[in-house]
Length: 333
Ligand code: KG4
Ligand code: ZN
Image 1 (tube, rainbow, N blue to C red):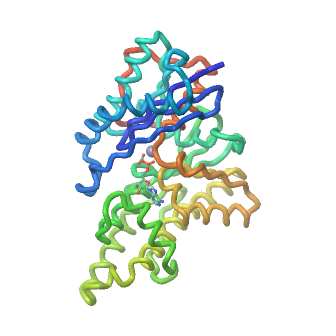
Image 2: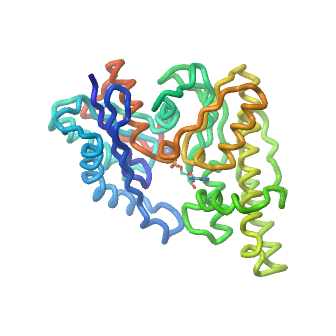
Image 3: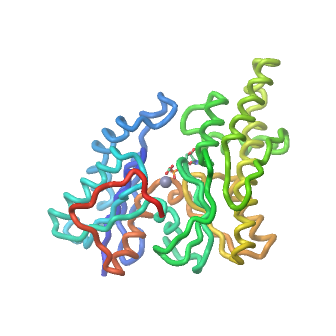
């Protein structure tokens, strides 16, 4: 029997989760709303709020899982990539807990954990599979050969898909984080109302900076002609932007699936919460007779359940780290 405590604090979500024998029994996520006023995550504020939230989040995760802190066998934590001050809070907590209880520490790569979220529950993809990992900081097509054997075969050359969502929403005057709001308004609009360009990037890589500029100019020109353009057409703009971002992502994923002859396709990361993208992957897989894997909403955005499940697979292999471990702001797969 194994009881793993998972800790996530890489950006602006403080999260704790308990995993018993590969089953997630709790996943507590404390969101930080303080950043809304600033239009983006303020790193110094994020680490202070993590410091306030981490102990209550862990206590609640233990209560929800009905697990006593003395029964935990190992602590898994996000080592990186992420904001260093935020990571330090989770890493320090994990080290202190492991030291106090004399149990092993397991370091986890946050981007690997997003992929391994697919191993929560019964519907698991088979190796090798492709995972489109799309978050606020990353846009990657990952060839997943085994639990901890992953290769990035395509990635963004500039902005991440989530950044494109958030920057578009900023242009539209919406609060941060804008991705969920674009999703909300897109449901009410016509996705074919406006055509935004698809960047022509060779191979399996992505680019979103040109799209952002074209959206900026499009809005600027229309608002110059009609100051109420955004208010009148918000739903159609969001639907059209969402459709373009989703098609950019899915066209490359389909290309990768054909090139690598892979039939199991997965989504991961915060942007995989997007309704248009989820729907698009389902349709793509149906058309090609591929299998699609889309995590439950609570495992799409940052959460400790994915850290705990990744920790479980490392625990089975006996792969532990020591008290000397330090967080890494940059941490390749
Ligand atoms: O993985 P995540 O929670 O944090 C990072 O590691 O970056 O991803 C956050 C990103 C943000 O850019 C947010 O706007 C986007 O995911 N996002 C969405 C949706 N929910 C979150 N984008 C589009 N539609 C959504 N429903
Ligand atoms: Zn993430």
